[in-house]
Image (cartoon, rainbow, N blue to C red; front, side, top):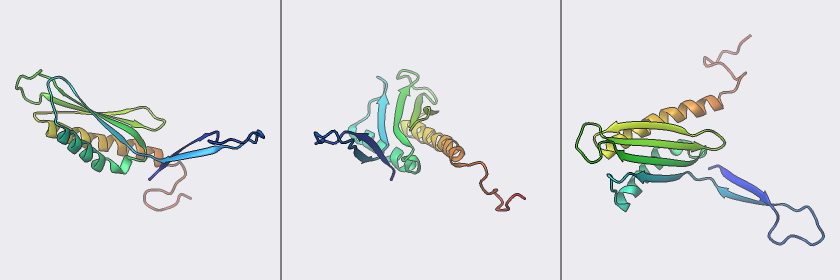
Length: 145
């Protein structure tokens, strides 16, 4: 797991004016926040299950992400229509612009699964490109001449 560190003055700095620096490190964790509109009510257990599902499916990217927001809304304001539940995932990578993925379905679970699948693809593309370095070996394993 990746660590985030911040530098600052030590808790008990010396009066001699020595330029001592205290380094505080904490384990990086991805915070998951679930938001709903007025037409969708979720129990605490359901929110915990959604959080656990997101954390497990996107665990591969947790070192890169500071926060992931889940926005659930009923686009038809309570009327029963096809694909009226909307799930929008907003991933906040460290030192990058947010990434979005959205899916509409007839149930919260289906919309969440669809948006999560799309977010996995977006993050694989984003971080795959970031990890690709110019001058690295070719995909076929044959070095250029």
